[in-house]
Length: 194
Image (cartoon, rainbow, N blue to C red; front, side):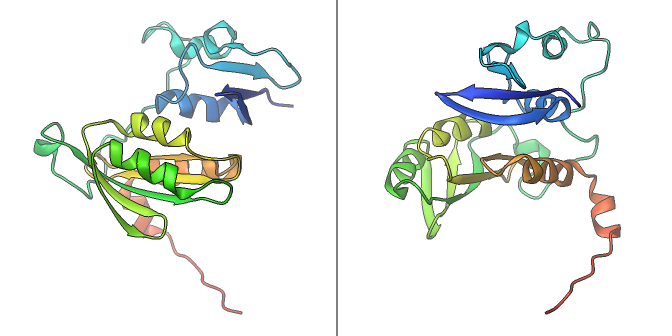
């Protein structure tokens, strides 16, 4: 059986995740050397940098035996701003939540502390903020319950961050988001109707 890990964040345990998923979390800056992890079957959590396999992720470039996966494709699709405006001013985010276990008021309050925001749907906002997508995600996750979900899109930088969708959906979103644009249009989809 392939190795897997669980992650402890704020007293909650998430996972199990495969090595490929853990590498993806690291590439997205969602897994740090001090993140608390445990291998399948272990009860004691320890820093990710102390795990023999995960420690390779935190070595300087060129020191690891296997190359780290690229964070961005060479020619990313730009659907927001041009390259010239990427570092100028705030980024623009779309935030969608599905709150089932907690009040949406706490989440909305946190969104409005992060920058100029507007609620455009029952659980959907646009946000203009100087904060990074990971900073926003980490702040908002604190307002979610065990069965609540969150999806954030950074429209200016073609990035996405999400929370609590489960391993299968997590993997599918990651594969689709990193797929080169030219391959997306080439696929044929069959729609079945009942």
